[in-house]
Length: 387
Image 1 (cartoon, rainbow, N blue to C red):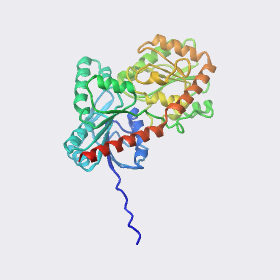
Image 2: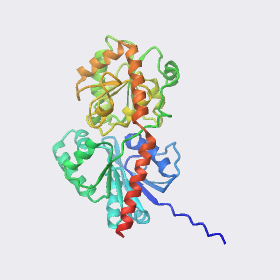
Image 3: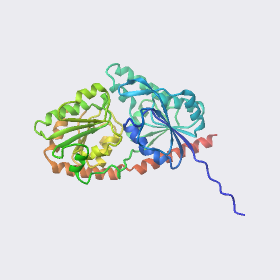
Image 4: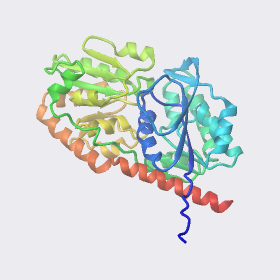
């Protein structure tokens, strides 16, 4: 008699985040890529804020919590149902946390109570992010954020970080939890150069005769888009056919600072690829980043990039090869870098090709997904052995 076939039950993974579609940022884009991959192996439930309907369908149970009417900067704060969070955590095999907002914090707290393993992906240097995104009390916010991160992250089983530098930074503030480097990747099949640049510009309503300097991301204080606007104002005098394309939305005060003639602001979109393909130069003026997925996606689309050397950006932007770097808040240096690219179309093309080649070599999304799955398997093995 043939032995009866048995199937190993799939792990129940609870993904918790305070950033999700249709609000597009680095975390949302990360989840949009990782959820389809993880759903092939795990039964997924996602806890997220309700920012409205989104176009992308996932093979996962999505549970959204309402948000308060007020916001911090441009971020609306979720009001998670604590009983529901507790129930879902108790039913999960593992919690994969993305943020330390209300949903993330409550989920980690419940996971500790129910002795559920927690893996957290570090998407930002939070003490820098929060302190640079406000006007007043930056020192206090920096201190409090570090203290709270130590308290929460030291109770997790594993932290996934995008680079060794980020791991070192978290070690230096007293976060001793085991860390594993999982580099971010880009879907280089989707994020690719356009076949025809003129057509790509017309497709998003731009004039093909214009040279497009672009930025994609949240318009928050920590992104420092006004520095890009000041640099653009400097170069457009000598390059009158240049336009500035800002794709995203954010703090109204910051949006007002960058509005003006020859500045195109289509707002937030669930598909940034057509806009990246329409650009000629990509700029990231950010004050703080870990890896900057937006910059990596721009390089995959064949764009020369000019970025501040924050986080791991200095590891993949090679000055003079696939782009340039410039000091934070230095509009004058940024304007000089822009002028070099604006007056030399062939340099833009060469750097763009080098950027695309670097993306193919370094930004391998399948490796990101594989490393996350390996991390989950290792944590679950240790957890099983301890029981």
